[in-house]
Length: 76
Image 1 (cartoon, rainbow, N blue to C red):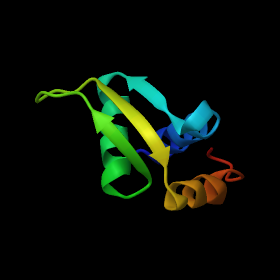
Image 2: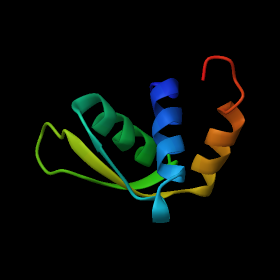
Image 3: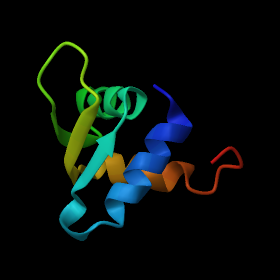
Image 4: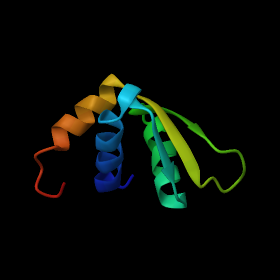
């Protein structure tokens, strides 16, 4: 998992109405997939073997904790 990218994406999702965030690009879509597998977000992905879009439908409690824990870390 790319922690800086995951932190950025969750931060963007937290500031969206209702927590919905659509991401585009292979790297971002893969990161959303990994975050969903880790239980940080709920998400839907595009169909196909090479998804380039994903939609975060909800940031979970674990996702909020992840974001808060790294918010003041110098690398983020």
